[in-house]
Length: 179
Image (cartoon, rainbow, N blue to C red; front, side):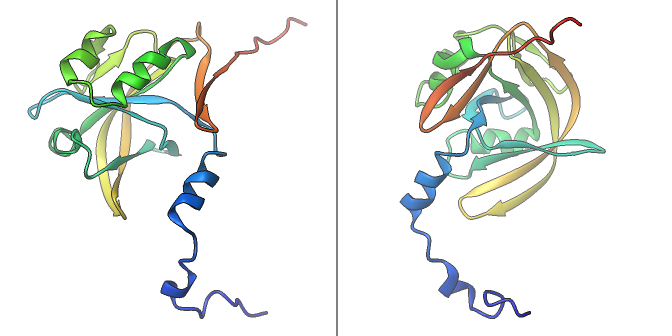
């Protein structure tokens, strides 16, 4: 059986409009994260939902970063970062790191502890993944940062925060029932 798409030039297949793609992606719920770095190029952070696991051997995440973002040069030079997965109490902090607020004000709005890489971990985050960037791939307007996890901090006392349908939602953690 032949594949009808295989023989069609790529330019002819690119029929999805940008807004249609964005509208469809609004139905893909994802955890909300603040990505931070600190090093020679300085301290910076931004809000991201484009984060996922790649492999557990070695433990690796991917983070997507727009090359036109104001924080891009800092992350590019530092080559370390911390993925802070937000609790439901961090909605305002997510908005702060997702906007045009000066970097000093962003970091002043919460408590942070340095990880082994020097990157700031958010006190009270569900999980903080301390990483070094091991590989970078350019795709369209973004860099895909492959990040090897070198340390993890976890907090099991909070509920999660997800972004779905262009809004924040709290994920209530269900504790296992005693038998």
